Image 1: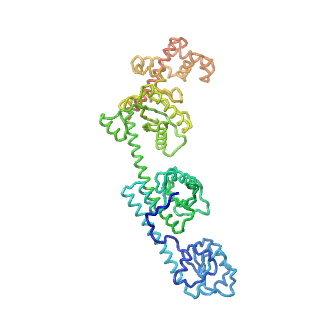
Image 2: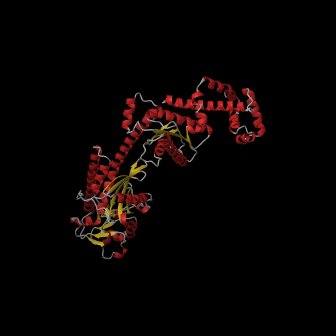
Image 3: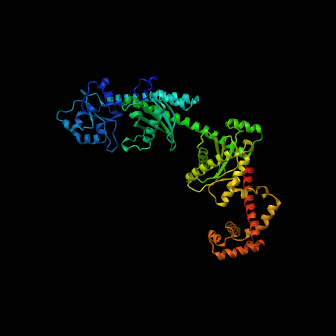
Length: 563
């Protein structure tokens, strides 16, 4: 068990509320006698009210002291019971209680104090007010001291770990900071094994609601027992970091004991309350830095896949800033992803999905970066040095892992495509273009799996001739006329995809066999070719692939030019 931190002395001030016992220790009340409630002298007081002037409304009288003249008790016995039921803390009788007043009639929940001689409501009320204000002033001074210590470090840019260390010094106990997901982002005063055990216990505690009887408006501060290492039980004082309605994390003081003194507990409450504001500001500042760095890295990845650097010097300078080895071989992976549910900020949701995709790997040492281009996730991953076959196997394994994880996370069919390995940063744009072409073809074919550019050879082998005049003329003569009729091109594609089998094609297209035969005759008349002839089927198959490849390639080139 970690010992309390003791190298920072706590100020010798009373930061708690004024108790009945402290009020009785004042010279004015030193001769007063406690008639009832001697076991409740640690209850707190805030102000005093004449007994005969208590408003009839059912408002709580918690921490309220009531002042009464002796003769008022006999006439208002029923009222005394009513105010006690409303939570009144103390009754000060200014003088001797009448002998004929039955002591058994005093409510058990009320501390009753008898003054030996009358001193007046004004003197007693002023004493209580002055002491209460004095207590609150001491608490405010300590709060200011804590805030000043933490704010000074924050403005000097000390960082989250130094701030948590200072909180731990002020609390004289270990402290951990958790982010919104309950993960430890900083800690002080705990060994590594204790951090793991206690953080798990704290997360479980925070996941449970607070019973209504223990709810408080004190800055969402909770005091709960938690399980520590080796079967120990610790006291956890936790305060939520709130910005607007969202919880951004928690500051947690951990006391290695189940018994915490009342003054220590009040001090810990003040420390956590002040710490949440400063620690929360530091966490937001660090998040802004991380988001800015992520945007800059995303811009670099987009420039890398588009090959839009003005010079090799710019490429090297920006790669050095992001600690990327431009001589390393790279693989590029792309995927159309659909967010699993509607979100207020789809762009931010896609960024989170890209960040998730970048972390999918059994090889955690491999450098992986991700960004979003339109509605496409782009992952650039450094590959291990080796021959081309080994790199292609490594890319295939990562693509399969990325496909499985994205399909599970997005809860829908996903296609992950990748090009051939690039031999350095300067040729990443070629691999990206191949990946985008493969993804476009996969989507047009309705395929959802991990797909490589090489797997689509029946399409990609035509890349060199797709942009020639002969290819464009073939598409114009065969494909364009079919666009005028309803579903003619779709019918032809389905017919050829099933090897000219009328029955299978009709079933796949969900039409009657005779309807398909009629459409095939119309297609033959429209293009002037008998589509049942094998030679003509090859020509049509070639035209369909050239058309699809031209459209996909044009879309990829438009995206690159738009950048």
